[in-house]
Length: 631
Image: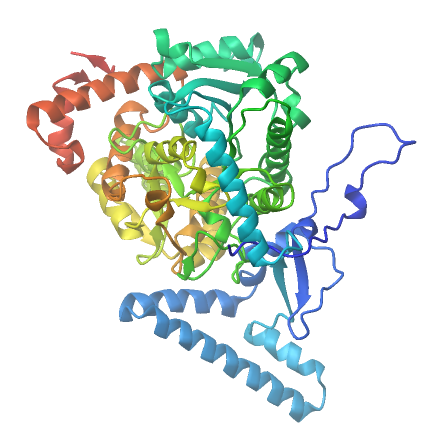
């Protein structure tokens, strides 16, 4: 199956070992990457005893530390733009690297000092790592034995699903229900013919005054759930499908009460683990806690449900990411394979999601847990409306930054100092660190939720990784063109390598000297997040299992159209992220969707096909855009 299979040899660092019986306090989880990854000697293949630090598993740790390497990345990007031959440029880079290695060896031979080879390589920026990383094996079984075990688990799932009848009544435990993707799952589950009950695990919510931060009250999970259902438009009979119970994914057993747990053991057919950190700039500790520890707890919870007497459990559904394959320089990231990426990981989000996938592999192969792994790419708003339930992260962040920069420039005063300052800030804020050839794999949230629900009645998905991604990726230059058309912002692309290593530090210092520390931090954050995804050579995500196994439509969503609708939504509905009240966003999104329905019915055309000016006028005929009230 191409899984990280073989003998398991987990290690535990001294600082993460559990406390002894004479010591009080909670058990400290092992957060060391060495539990999942091993460093090996490139020449002998032998495991090295070094403790692996998380930072050394990221791209920038092996690239952004030498001026020659930065210059080479920049020149490679320009050559690809001129020649259009990426393979030729990569061969050229490898040839230059080999030439540098020969020059270093020659220098050492001339001087008679072997250490001079290393010094010259460092001077020339030659890649000279004498070690490599690989994932630890997850089982002692052979590949044939792993496949046999997976077939057996699929057979068990098929049998259990059949026992539920021709029209199975599915009862699902869902984590992450309050998140962007979780909300869409609730919406689709409300009308799904097979979903009989959804039990959402949520924490109580503390309500604070936005200005003073004074605690105004605490919402129980039940109260929080009632608000959530109202906001997403689930009412009446459909609302009775949903229950919200107190729990915490970062705690063993989700810290669910024993009474509730007894009830769930008798009734659940599926566990859908959707909760995760989706912050590309989170620390390792924060990402590990949400993505790995949460995954471990979810798998243990499902294993207990599966093993319970009289259990109706069919399968655990793990929501991962197609970016667990890391930086691969445009090679195919296969659905059914997981190997440590030669070019490392872009951030701790990718790294910890890969670790979580290995935890899932172990639960599948070693423990016999019936589990499906679904791997979405970068999730954006609804394909038809752009609705994102108020989300302001990931792709929404640069769109909002561009729009707010334009608004600030349009409202400049008459004083030349203010205009000069505003012009400079606007120029900086509308720069997009991306190479023209870079491709982003964006997938609308409704496609992902549809794939998750389809997996519930697809026993063949057990033991299989499935990319919920697209085969029509969007290029950076198309992102800039659509942004310019929809927002009226003259966004300029800048080389991501130079931006990250040269321009951004200078710009940040200038903005801070101008008293724009907040904008400086925002730009640094955006550059950190998108600088790596905007470089040439992004991986190509293999797709096919979403159609072949889950039965989703073979025609995947139009990425350009979905991105256009996201721009329109962020501009009119969210006012570039300035409308933050969840109730107000919910009201606006319902009105927005109704207006789009009317426009498409009366025109007989899909709204993404309309030019920006025409679409604005048609919507303005139905909605007063400033107050966002129906006319």
